[in-house]
Length: 297
Image 1 (cartoon, rainbow, N blue to C red):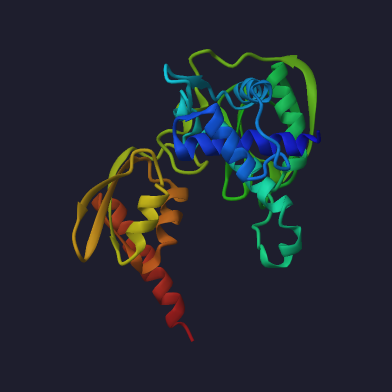
Image 2 (cartoon, helix red, strand yellow; image 1 turned 120 degrees about the vertical axis):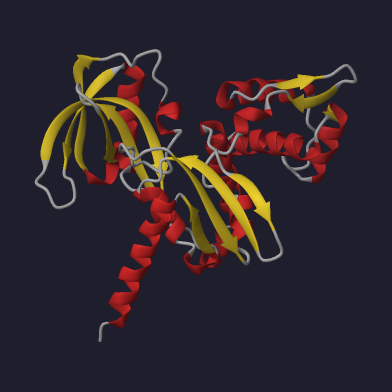
C-alpha cells in the first residue's frame, strides 16, 4: 500500500476517535466501511493493531481500550494547538483532503509555502546529531556573513521558519529565508538539560525575544473581533476578563514586543489597548503618525 494511503488511514482513526469519543472495534469498522477508507473493506483487528502501534510511534498518541472494550485516545493533550504532533496531524489531514480534490485546484487557494524550507533537513540533522552548523547569513540591509552556531530549535511563524541558536555568547534568532547556505560541521554541542525552547518563547508572541519588560496587557475588542480571539488565542496567557453587549476585554501576561504590537494593530479599529498606560500611549503615537501620513497631500 502506498505510504500516502496508510497515512490517511492513521489520520482517519485519530480524527474519528477525537470526534466520537470511545468506540468499539465493531463501531470503528462499520464507520470505516461507510467512509470507504479502504475501498469498502472492513477494518480487521490485525490492521487496527498495526495502525495503533504506528500512530503511537509517529504522533505519540496512545489509543487505549477500556473495560467495555471501547477504544479511546488516552492522552489528547499531545494534540494541543502548539504541539508538533498537532501540526503534523493537521498537515497530513489537509494533504489527504487536497489529494482527493485535485479537480478543484482552481477553487482552493493556499498561502505561500514557508520560506527557507530547503535548509530544514540539514538543520534538523544537525539538531539530532548535536552538531554545530556553518551558515551564510544576510540580515536585511547588511552584508552577508558566515557564522558557526549551535542549533537549538526551529519555530514556524507567519509563513517563515526561524532557528533559535546559541552563538557561544548568547541566544540568537535567524530566519531561514535569509540564509544563503547551511552545512554541518564536525564540532559537537550539547543543549543544557535545563534549557527548554518552549519556555524560552513562553513570555513572547512570535519570534522577537528582546529585553522588553513583562506587562499585564488588557485590550478591548469591539464587534466581531472578540470571536477571533476566542477561536484562536494569541497567547497561552490570554484570558477573557469582561464581556458586555458592546465590547469584550482580554488580558495577557506577556512581553509586548514589536511582533505582539504588530498583531494587535492588525485588528485596526476593532481593538483598543487599555493597559498598561505606556503601551496605550505607544499605540496612540503610532495611530497619530499614520493619520499624519494620510493627511499629507
